[in-house]
Length: 74
Image (tube, rainbow, N blue to C red):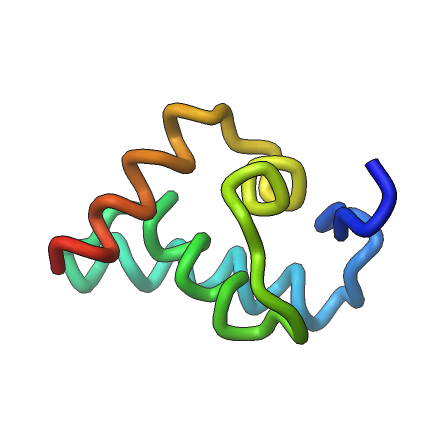
């Protein structure tokens, strides 16, 4: 889809940040997927919907749903 930002098209620094944030999340007691979603939202220059997140991180729709739910409940 046009307008979607695939993580493979992001700069290496952003990919590294999102990946590292996922690893750090585990150490903080946070789900890796939720941590990566949080990092992607943080660095995104525009609002992202669930499809954008799933496409960018190669997550299933249910993984995105659970990750976002974890962020909202936290």
